[in-house]
Length: 270
Length: 214
Image (cartoon, each protein chain N blue to C red):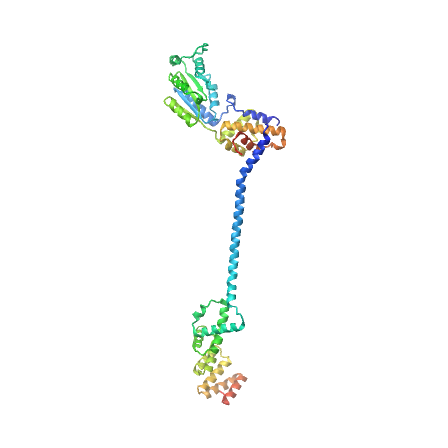
């Protein structure tokens, strides 16, 4: 059993690595929906959901799955400024580096895109799109009109961001996909699959049904909260195992440790 | 993991906070149960007190302070029996058991002392329902004493109809016959009775009649 908790802890480090993607009933359905939308002649697709519902990893997974079938690019972090964003876009469209001390002429870029229509279909997955300034979003809208570049825009679901989506893309977004927190069953499968992927069967079996219910109650099925909570649970278990082994139960994860972890990550208040 | 001690402390606080509503709830239920229990016990005490208070009060009211008062009270009641209907007697708020005893006593005192005939009428009415031999004999004796010999004759016959072996009833019948002027008939009946029973009392009566005492 030694060091198993440390291994388990690392399983739940929050990442958008495709290797960490867990196929669940709901996530598979959403991926199929996104794939189907990408195949349609749409200008823009809006992917939205509250933080921690798996938007980023889904975009990553989509790129990984479709990269041999389509010209697909993933913009993980928003560009700091317009110049940087168009530099990246220029590179994708022209497949050339922008000469130094030069800048992109947006009108020329749009014309260039128009010329590429029916020759290439470029899909750009824009993560954290709510962080893009309005000017860039407006230019993204104009670029999507060329029908050469298709944008999949991932937004956090808040009232304000929904308004942005309506304002900028009302006439262009033809499909919206909403990501939601996992169901109780899906979250249980998620935790098990994550651990089993790393051959941590014994640890996975330490979670009783009532522990899973408690974790679901605490995290409301949110993947990010679940990762944070599980990481902390194993961190505490790891500490006890190494320093106070009398406080650890080897048959199951004590409720006390789950609650302590929830307190630490802020899911419970004192 | 350097903050484990603090985390454990926080967890203890959290558990206390989480349990406090349960503790409060349990405590409230216990307090409520105790209050309900006390309430019902009080009610039981009240019932017991009520049950005891009433008879004590009656005893207080009707317990005679001394024998003279008691006799006076009895006499008063007897007089009322003599002058009023039975329904009035029932209205007197006295304990049931005592009431029955008092009524019996009252009637006897009443008949022997009262000068009115109302009491005899009451007994006659009662006899019509009860056919009590004591009532009939009582009326025969009483009427004879009063000099109402026809009535005494009638009630001695009524007594005899119920029980033919009451000597007093036969003597009143004979004496009434004699008082009504049928001395020969009376003596004949008495001789027949002496022959049948060899009663010493009957012989004495015959002696008295013959000597003109009756």
